[in-house]
Image (cartoon, rainbow over all chains, first blue to last red; front, side, top):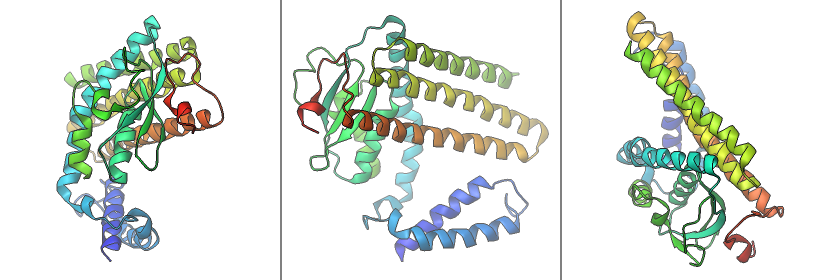
Length: 175
Length: 118
């Protein structure tokens, strides 16, 4: 039942964002509100077991949702800008030392690993190639492996980011 | 006036990064390094061009009070969001598929994934 309500609220929210500005009850017209509620009920009936598969309602806390935009606009965006300038420099000078390194992480939940892997992939210069399902180690193709890093068998996750400690932020959001 | 300058600045940044992505595609040696240039730099550039659209819609809304410009801004924002998400998942899928089908990073100082036997 909780899964049904959460899926309903989430899909209704997405529908209302997409149709904002259609009428005069708030920002929406009566027909859009009715269609949104009916479609969200249908979606919730079909998809409740997919969205809440882990039966873990930690993410229902709105404070965690508020942290996500702060995370994306703040430390993550700074990291992306810095890495973009770095890749731009390497495009021009061709000074690259590519390699696939193994990165271990303290994050335990699926959502945490998902956010960390996506953050790493969205940061230019690093791509998550594969994930070890049991140990949750990430295999990351790095365009510029640091001096001496190729000798270390495993690298900690926060060593990939130089400005902000992104894994710490993700732990705050997802765990 | 400020909005116009913001739009021009965002468009210029976006186009510069998209151009760098194309140059990287031509210059880098193998699939993985090329993916760094094309997927990431072009996503960053496209996010900035989308930001220009959002600033444009906000400035038009403030001057005309017409709700269609809110719709334009919100849809552009959702497009940027979807672009960022699909880019991450898509490039991960391409890289994993390439490595599994035997395309190894050809200039590489280390390949832990191959050593792990996956």
